[in-house]
Image (tube, rainbow, N blue to C red; front, side, top):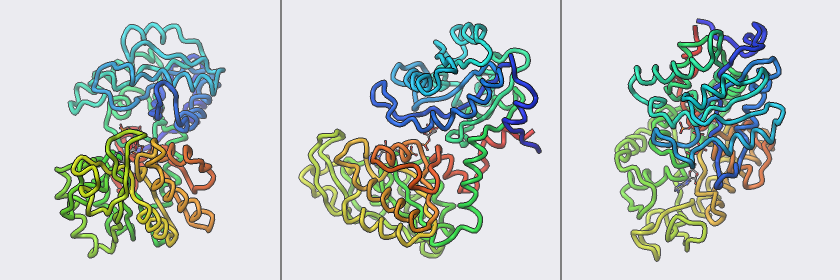
Length: 412
Ligand SMILES: Nc1ncnc2c1ncn2[C@@H]1O[C@H](COP(=O)(O)OP(=O)(O)O)[C@@H](O)[C@H]1O
Ligand SMILES: O=C(OP(=O)(O)O)[C@H](O)COP(=O)(O)O
């Protein structure tokens, strides 16, 4: 099986040809403002390389998790506006729809060296359908936009773990190539799977709890220590028999977590859970909040209505101490709702500890759209970390050793 690269495609000649690139433009927004443009900047070299070579570039991407129909708040418009600011020479415009008449007309009128961004692929329910035929039909509509001599480039590292039409099925329909972002991300992440220097500490948080809990199975025995914060921690506390008030909880995952906790010691992995939590009266920037013991969440003044929005200061310090002992650290998922200043301290403590670890020679990787946004928002520079990956779930599934649909689809 061979995997073809972007440079091979450019060498073959793309002038006047339609090339469909799948990028990860799933950026955090505040209204219509992009709050972290890291994924856009990371996608630009591939887009520019094709445009410079004279391709008519069609860009497909998702934003958020709309329910399979257009929804204004999930439009790619803010991402396209930022792309146009960063690279005005690309003449990037947004199509009115994804594969419908708007996209068809705009694609037909596209000049060589210009970029047309198709509207959010998840506005069509077939993109994420479990039904192979539905996804294939949507992929065929995407492929049709590229005319007779089109090509497909997968540069969306953050989405390579998704068996979606624009990531997986499309590669069966067009000559397909791997983008340089995907290639370089994999090169760095491979350092975490071969001859990993130990102690190896993994820090997990964020809100995509069930998605990311599954990968822990494979980290047992590989990671020396797993630090659990963010929205994920409440399922762990519940698995230990504690009440978690109105915090993010995935009840059906409790037995899964209980199984991990039971197997960890024998596998040689230590879980470190927060001992204190910042509990809030509601999910807002100005909510009242208090620090309570992690096993006494419902004893805060907010009772059973309180929700944990950050790890507490003792836990932040304990996590930082564990990180300081590591030679290798992988971190995905903010420790709290860092978007609100009152709940950003746990994430700041972990980011600071990774930065210090890097400075003293450790290898640190931060992965994930929101984790990357968090470290930048909190004032850390990209250069303070060994690597900032554009993919959180994608990195985790790669570390798990799972076959990634977006990669296997490119083999031909
Ligand atoms: N305790 C919590 N309760 C609810 N949401 C949380 C909590 N801790 C962190 N989060 C949220 O998790 C989100 C990021 O999760 P996720 O998408 O899994 O991370 P990443 O994009 O880095 O992979 C952030 O928007 C943050 O506000
Ligand atoms: O933000 C993303 O992943 P991440 O939060 O794991 O970094 C990717 O764009 C994938 O999005 P998805 O998890 O909705 O498929």
